[in-house]
Image (cartoon, rainbow, N blue to C red; front, side):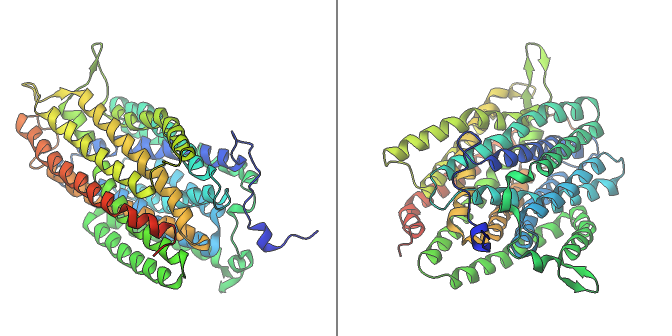
Length: 502
């Protein structure tokens, strides 16, 4: 019997080959795990490399470049998600993004400044094709209303963090203690493994990664070039432009802000096109996006100010051996792996009792825990010794609180996008979700620059330089908790919108 196009697009709901979840989840789990190994391996040493190898000042250019790179890496998913929705499909987008990122990691180890910026551009553009579309396929594996969906995203999120845990321990240590280029090259090896894993596991994705209109993708548009060719050529042209914006970080900031404005207008127009329940859900999603941005503005100090603080101001001795500062980037994913199953069980049991918190309440809890983490670190600064160093356990406790907040927000937010967005626009809305994280990175760069006020690369750590952290972290504590209170107040209204009630 022939199978209609509509039937092909229906999710497979009886596939339980991966611990009660679809087999496709295992492919996405592994591919994303290795991709995150590359991303977090490079991130663990990127700011340290700029400050302690390239000599960029702590209070300006290094944090600005880092923030611009991360912002572009989360902004380009808007374009990558749209292209996947309209033409490429998720599968081709993931493969092309993986190719660009693999080249980018290896280019990072080339000892020329132009290669450094070109590599970051390849990584940011490639991430735009890879990351939103992996998450979008996860959502398509489940039928609407399937109670496994949230737990599937938490499993997926935990898998990502296996790569994020191991990368700083290996790439970070090798880069900081042995050779910066070696750390970057090993990150590239991880990305290459993830790309190969997805390539050989495509059959388990089935139809979920294919474009809705494959004939449109291959139809000639310009001379003999089809839309697939034009996307490839266009992304290659975009790479040097992205490199230029990274070299001048303010341009990247303006670019992301411009994309954000256009994205917001597009979301508003999309919302107006919807009717009834779909419109209310889109309004709720836009509101959640705003608080998502605020969370990441605080959380993303991890790769910038926290990283430099660990290098300059933490007592990092364990049994007489000083561990590398980059290794602290593994603390967050370690806690994620440990506590993701705990949160899965908690949400499941509360759901069975009819007491599971709503999505906006979970977001509010995330903001409170974010603020408390900064409060712990600010207190720790007051205990500094005469060498302007504090116990590393204050930062570990801060990471614990931030991780608990992340588990209340990030996997829940990804799942919310697939629930609340119209099915045909999930890829675009996922990209817009990542765009809010891009704006969070820009805000995070501004915060980091304040913590390093007046500091230069290679300077001796002082009590005065450490006190800058206290002042800024206290302010972030008040802002995060204030946002949490506002969201807690709004949560009943947002919950009604999500249920389609005006």
